[in-house]
Image (cartoon, rainbow, N blue to C red):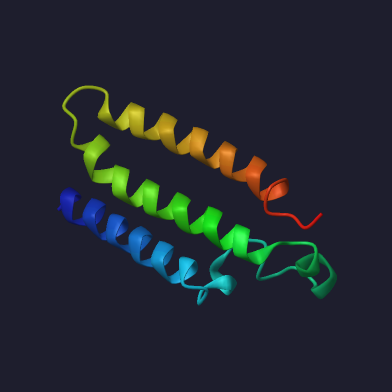
Length: 99
């Protein structure tokens, strides 16, 4: 049962990553969907889509690989996700903003 949940989450992350990369899921990006028009104008949406889509694909793709490791797989996955989230936050507030 646990494996089914892991693979369902992985599939969901991959599908959402593809949807966002195709430009159809801007409303799914946290913070962007509730931003005012002025705040949205400050964001380079193409870069934000690329960043969020790639992070979703990477986290969804790495999930089964790292979680099935016998020793320390869950810990490694947790560290990778935390580091990825921090890098994503920094890039979203620098690289994905209009100059």
